[in-house]
Length: 192
Image 1 (cartoon, helix red, strand yellow):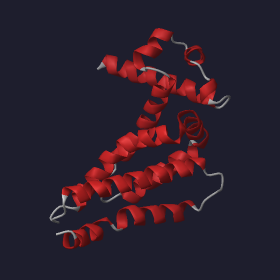
Image 2: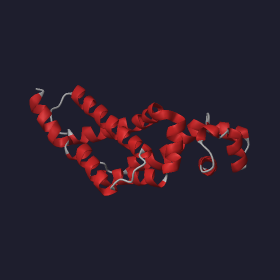
Image 3: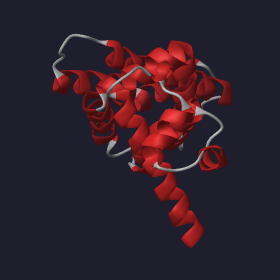
Image 4: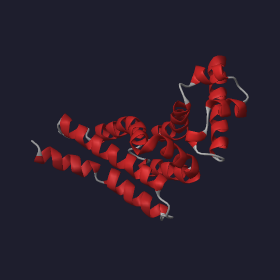
């Protein structure tokens, strides 16, 4: 238990150092040396926890955003989960933009896709309970919803304009969650 606590504290300190450096320069200009000097750890410690800086960025996004979204009951509290994601991007716009610039759209989407595929898979499974829908149609829906939500978040990161946040949350929650069950019910009839 003590080792896990120390590991988490070290990783968190590395993230804090990375964020501090990202306020001054772009991610692709930050070196491992910069991070370890800022954090006060040695190179071996960094590489014990992370393969490279991008691995650190992925872990940061995973722990600060994705893992929290996974804790929501997405059948009941989907609007709160979307609001959390939008607020996270809004609060961490500079850091998310730096990650986008360094990783690129495709890599960031691949990162989000990996986690969201499981999230939307669980949602589709819950909504389809008691409805006879083919497995391949459910997979199709999971892929469509995952792609849409990942693209929405990336576009939010890249957007320069100030959006009506509540309207965006309402649109995305209705589009992504409000029509799943009726769509599954209709698919059960349509694709017999």
